[in-house]
Image (tube, rainbow, N blue to C red):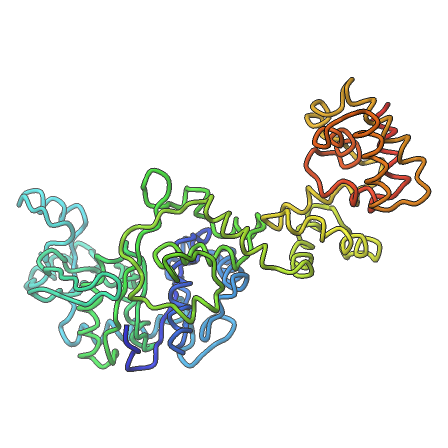
Length: 491
């Protein structure tokens, strides 16, 4: 794709009406990467005209999520900009002005029909065209007076032009709609409140948005917006019509569109479950785009350098949680131990593993322990289960009953006793000394295979079959606590 001739201005305009969807984040990512690639402007706008469903909680979730992901915006909430305000609920005067100008130039008309009346006319005519039939396009004054006498309040409808509307979609190529199948659409409710069909194009026009990259589900509304743009140019509100690119559907299980009811759809859950923002964004980028045919793992900076909207494929992309996990794990491996430690601390605090604020003892132990688990965790939230045994008070230490049943029984008691005797006799408590003592006692002394020798000891001192490396864990746990847990397991 060639470099745009005018400075790129793209926007992300979510509605704060629920939990943010991963499809929304994928759309935000592509817009952000497109803007950054071309040195353009990423505008963040809040579409909160749905007064009944919009909530402050949802708005805060969206802002927090975008901040966590690192998708910073150049204009919008919290940063301002030359086209403020960036909340649609605060822009009603601009929509009223647009409506007045459109009406004055006869691009709109008042419609007094009820939905039931329009549906009945469609049925009687046997029409297969969904939507409004244009009944009120050319009402006489007498008809208008009769409707008003009944107490009806009109909605404002836009007059779709005759013919066809074609645009070169940045993802799909040439797209054409015959306007006979695109009915006149409402721009505001009967109470005067503007609808999405008006506010979205008006805001894009006033904010001089150059490219609209959005989901495929909005494809059918594009001819309406293009027609409205032509009208907005005529009345002096729009300078140009933006270029459109419609991104592929994100599919869930069974090749159905990923819906808000699907657990994988909730973007905030990935943050709470310990995914890295780098890992999640990398995976979402793969839902419709690739940096190279043989490469799946890349940084956000590499994506920005390579991203072209023309490289996005039009075919639906299926959300694969296993691949998302694998991509996230690959990004975990790229982090330093210090970085992982910094990132896991909030999870360790939330799970009560370490103190909040972190005391000196916990900080020192964590610094020693993290190198043992950094290569073993694929999500930040997994650190708590692996490290809790080191920080828990002895009177609160518990052994997983299922793991105990599998490792500590009649056959495990001699192993634990031999381990206790060997460790209690050690003059120095170090990883090397512990390893030598246990191998001598269990492998040489009891004739056990290494893979079977240390399971009972691991469960007895860490509480679980899965833990950091055993010998290092025992050193960090210390002589007294290690021997005490072995003694307790022996009964």
